Length: 285
Image 1: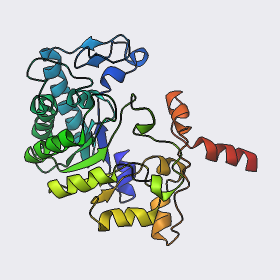
Image 2 (image 1 turned 30 degrees about the horizontal axis):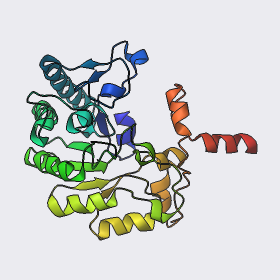
Image 3 (image 1 turned 45 degrees about the horizontal axis):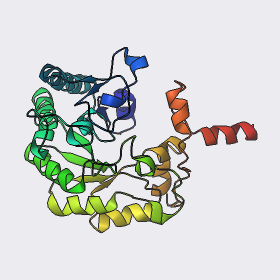
């Protein structure tokens, strides 16, 4: 994979993650791990992590980063958003621990910072280490923007190279990380105000994700200090060549319909593709 990207003069960063409470036990053969048996979580089999588990997973994140570097990736991104394990530790909605990994925002961030330091130890100071994190959970007792910004400061102090801002968890309803029906510019960039706040507080580059579909808006977000870089996902599933299209002067908005039908193909093991586009191709054929 890395050779294929580099042959096209591209760069590729590997995201390293643990799904925590939301891991699929049918795939892993193990009970999902959680920071604590927090009130309000769905009634599902899971195991509360011990201090030994935290040490083991800290080391595992470091080893994952080392393998990524050895495989030729140009950096790694630690996934600490969307209710994944590291995100759960940051959130009072998931983390009701009473030890050094629970309670205050400093304690809730401890595991994440230990992972960051271990990853940095494994890959060295010259290898880019990024993070994806929630600006808010948008659920009862969830992570707030104020605490998220405090964590951002801690990450900057511990040498993070860039922060990608997202939000929401599988329990956030319509305010989850992958929202439907982005049919107007007003519905795009749903984390932009959080981006502005982070930009005013931090010096590290800020990457903004979340429903960005139009080139003009993306340009304005950078020019007006909401972000340093723009991130997209679903639009590239529909149009892998979207950036080249915009660079050629064709600035029509991304064709992605934000209908999330692509989730079905991924979860069924068929791979990532735009279901709508494939249906249209079938009719044309």
